Amino acid sequence: MKDNQFRLWRQLAALSALGITLSVSIAIGAAIGIALDRWLGTSPWLMILFFVFGIAAGFTNLLKDLKRWGG
Amino acid sequence: MEHHPTLIQLPNFLAVIGVPGDWIPEHVWMAWVVMAILIGISCLATRRLDAVPGPVQNFMEVTVEAFTDLLTQMIGPKGKRYLPLIGTAGLFILVGNLLGVVPGFKPPTANLNTTAALAITVFLSYNYFGIREHGIVAYLRHFCGPILWLAPIMFPIEFIGHLARPISLSIRLFGNIFGEESVVMILLSLIWLGIPYVIYLGIMMPLSLFTSIVQSFVFVMLSMVYIAGAVQSEHEEHH
Image (cartoon, rainbow over all chains, first blue to last red; front, top):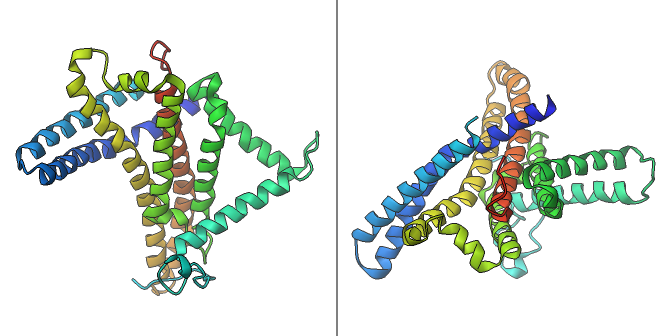
């Protein structure tokens, strides 16, 4: 029973990271895009590209975490 | 919202290095208090190691065993070598959070600087452990995913996902503890027939204790998940 309880707390810890991981990934993607745009002057295409990368990263990590910790 | 300083303030003796202000910043001072508590208890526990332990040594043994159990459950039998990092981070966060419940003290984790320092340390550490375990080329190959020619797409995606981890760790801990402490400060500055004090004692105190312990546990668990992800070889079964 103790191991079962422990698994629940582990699930809680991992699943509580999901929401913030998704939003922060998108934000980091956009931030990297904007920074690279300012450096290379190719606005706004690089920002859009890295924004899409951020969305992809966010959802990839979301699905991977859900599959692993879904329960 | 008035600014309630802590009970004791230290004058700024670090001004020579260029730290501004008249007083030592509160999160730094409270972090020193947490360090003093942890070092003090550790010294008390290990001063005279008995085979049949006294109360302080017993308590510390239970704590160390709890961390070691968690580590071996998450990372496998090689988990014990990460005990210094995980144990220190966990105990620092736990004592730091609980210090906020004591009136007159402010939790050091209520400041983004402290939590970001902890999160960046864990981030750099788990990458270092991965590189130490697998070598840098094999570790970077983890980032590229299973199909090799998709690597130019997978690498930025994995990179961004990895960068999201320390940010999420720091902001989660900071948000929880700062929010709880702000609510307590506002409740205590209301004078309304004593009702805020009842709310404080009946609701906020237990809630503060609960979130302090849960948030430190979540931080430790996620650090162990990240270390396990970096250190485990690919054919080992994740459970």
